[in-house]
Length: 251
Image 1: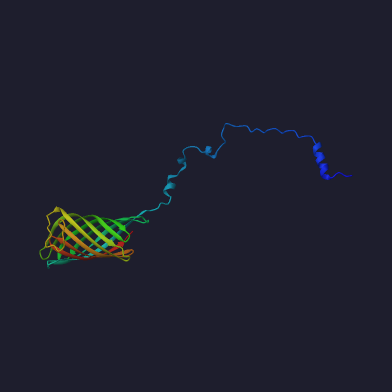
Image 2 (image 1 turned 120 degrees about the vertical axis):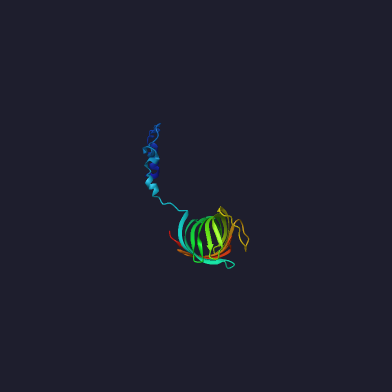
């Protein structure tokens, strides 16, 4: 009678001798650490840095600087029929302002202007103004020192003697897009020259001379047009000024 295959396989396995144990494989321990790529570096990590390469890296500009030149034309009339004249001149401006979105947009505006009369009067005006300009949305403020050197001799005898005035200007401006209306007041006191007392003032005065300004600015990049009317309370009497300035953004 034949033996089933499964039973024959089981009897053969039982008759086979037990395999000898292979034993335990031991891995020797080495006290020295394995080599690393860091071990191949030598010297100070900064020794391989090229300073010129760092200077060539792109840098982000946070503040922009801009210059402008502008011709000036101002019609000036001393109220009461004491004389009128056209004053012509030029100015140089410089602006600093941020180019990124910041919680408080803060700029710096500095201007130097020189004008002289053409007929009807003689003299000279030199004005230096620098204003810090914070913006709160579309509403902007300007506050800063002013320095003025002037002398005016009018054809009908009114005179503003040579003097140096130091003061401050406070203004407010609204950014309405293309048009920017502006109001400002600028009191100043004599620091060199003969004393000045405002003569027959129309508006309130502070110190030796006070100028009230109202104007409109038009942004037609790269040209900015400024229209301004001012009432200056001085020793010559209330003086009305109406002028235009063309600010060409040079670079």
